[in-house]
Image (cartoon, rainbow, N blue to C red; front, side):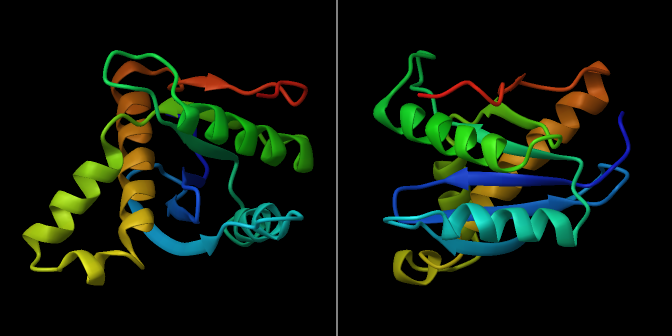
Length: 157
């Protein structure tokens, strides 16, 4: 297991959930929900500021594939956003990992705590980001290999 904090990122159309893990890669925790920028790159700048604050060695972005593993319009959006992160932060790897059902799992977990759908909205993206990152660090610990794939800085949608 590589040492160093990482950020988990759940890209949505309106909001981006952000989580982080400790430098030992043991536990992912929620950080914040970043509003998605319609224009400009305020969302990218905020996520990179969080990465700097926690001295993250890499950014782990959820790659929302369909249940069959095929790409979806959300996949294209997440890959495009990950490409923007990679281009704005050379030297800090951006890794795409399979995130099938992370938002559904987050909603179920919140529902189990008694949160109604309206109460979930502000935090569901953070919980999904925690699920994405926790899965990634658990997979790395189990296999000894970093999960998913690293996005090249020149790779785009």
